[in-house]
Length: 541
Image (cartoon, rainbow, N blue to C red; front, side, top):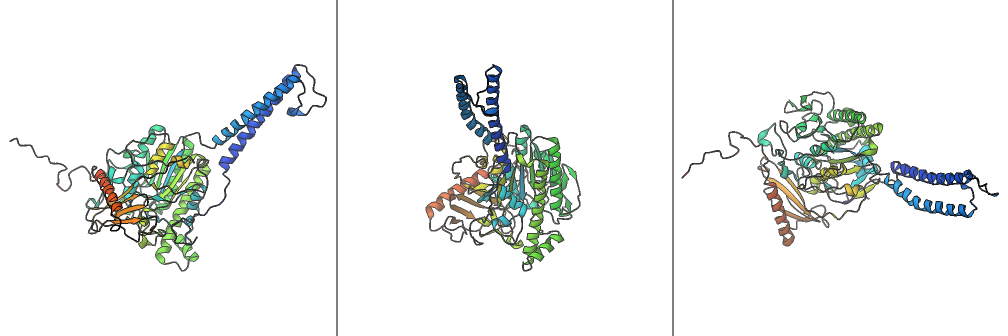
């Protein structure tokens, strides 16, 4: 299929799933040997009672039974075999499903474009380890970030809610409070808080971006262990500073590691996996890389490798490809560590990105319009894959419309935890297990609040209902309506031509905005001398 079409060009191959086949085969063989043993023991009892072997008897367990009593015994054994054989096969098939609670690893990349991995069909990039997840697991052809920017998508992942419901409609920048557009709701329950009572050890390695100060640091919001970066972005992958501040932490301790941020997060993740393999028990690892977010700074040797392979590639594209390929190598080390420690066989790995790529940095968002920061498909569509050996059929794919927040509900379900009843997320665990799932046809809502002259502190929004999509990509621009079935590139605005659909979606979007408006999105304390509430005394008349 040529590049530039609206379909994944997912590489596929026929794979024998050894973790499924061999346990099933083994149990079936054991069951048949059990039957043979029953026959042997029965014949031994016959001999022990003094009856001689028939003159033309067989050998071993296949001895011919000649007497009427023996014939009856043979029939009973045959019926028993017929009854036990299907039972053995059912048991063998059921053994493919892990019996212990599965570990959950969520790998989140930062600003990775929908087409920026080679399994998508992109020819100028090599990502064998990311591709491995797609090949060995399930491809999500319609995976969407909950927002076109960072903090809201991360809030959605960890709470299972649309981000404005939990106080994060925009990017949190607490180090520059005049330009911060979210504050994680104090009452929101985060995924680690729900998994801990079920026996899970919970860890975040990498980028947090939901607050730099108390009470909104990772260990205060439920994680047992945090080793990573609190802020929104690094000004340099090697110094790890933001506006001159060091936001690298080990729990609450300030740390100052050396090296490229991608390598640091990879090493910390591998260290954690080795520790959990020794400690035992299920765990949640949320591994949030800051790559390939700008500044686009790949290690020199990786950039040189790309330039040698693709001599005609533009410089900015070469730098981004090198940064992603370096990231892919890190993900490969994490997958290898899961294999080495034996954890992989009972670990669900989910891979995605927080939003679309940045076209100005050379990103590939596939054939879709727009990029990070925009409500068009290129800003919202992201890579999505899940691997769970023995549960997910290798090379599987789905067209299910899936959102970042659905990871929350899915993790709860596979961990045997009841998700809060008022969340917006819908679990895709049944689909991973190959169970029948009713067609999921919910409205999907997207929001971003931002400041500056382009936004003025207002929001941009989108709402998807079936194949119809309503969006406002600037708070100062009209609403637009697209039929994505006939116009996936969002080229023809139908707002003026299809008023019934337009009006219905406007009403639905307005309702979503009202619900989100019930949650404050700024720190509940006086700011710049302005009181949080009217505290003037009441003067009686």
